[in-house]
Length: 392
Picture 1 (cartoon, rainbow, N blue to C red):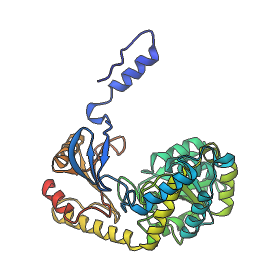
Picture 2: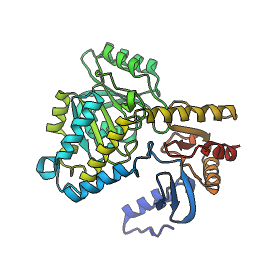
Picture 3: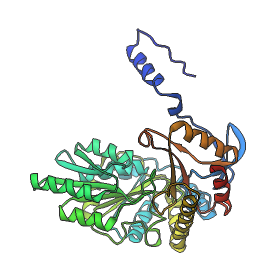
Picture 4: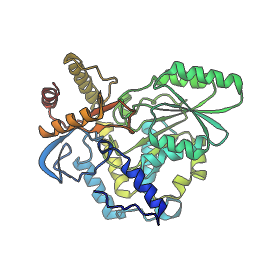
């Protein structure tokens, strides 16, 4: 219950109260405490029933892998829980350099910088490539962190239809004809978190080269899963000026990164306030990520197997009469459209022990509410049959 009381004495409080109460009940968010029992089973603090987690981005179930946990424990004992300062003051540890170097080599990028979160990395990345003289063309469905980076950069923004490269090229052609010297940046993602879809990276890169536009790709949901050995869909495409990513998904850890060439990387190092004025990524998270990266390198088929499983799920959903969810990765959205129907299905699935989030506006467009299934390496083989029985 909301305990705010409108007051003529505090008009700003009253305005906030009005805004808050204008949010429909079926659009309000509630936080639930979770008690993990394993990488895929948890209990809500308000409900003792165990739930199979089909909502987590811990795609490879590495957050509770003993190698990852032990690496974090050792790093905590040696370096402390936190870094204590920014990278330029006294927050840098040898672990930071080791992860930046190892990750850069694995991704085929000259320069990698670490950030406390993927959101922060995206803020820094966009601001490094764009300023008030830049025109940014962004996929209509890019992540909020990228949009925030655009606004912070001062650049002008145009949107192109989701993964529609014909629309993008048309807009670039018009812009170049009008302003031959205009600074341009194109922003997209390699795996969209709410759609499960991916752009054609080679074609996207070709178009950007044709119109002399820089290209930034958010690989947050793809690195560790898609591409050769899980290196992401931009691997082997050095023409992509910058990629961003996070360790809070396939790596089962936390933090984010930017990977680019030496020139842009050094520009970031010298000018990025998001990097300069933040406490360095905590040593236990750095060590955990290094351990996770080692596991991914030694098990390059993990991502491929997960994608094969997700294709099987898509095939089975289509055979059961549902519209086939797009994509090939572990994110599988089932679009119902109506908010209430989506919430009802979410609750029905919880009753049978399956936790699948109801994704509603403003996270997705109006009339596009959906149940979002996320596959992870550790879910039981009978999960889909349990799910399908309760979808029919």
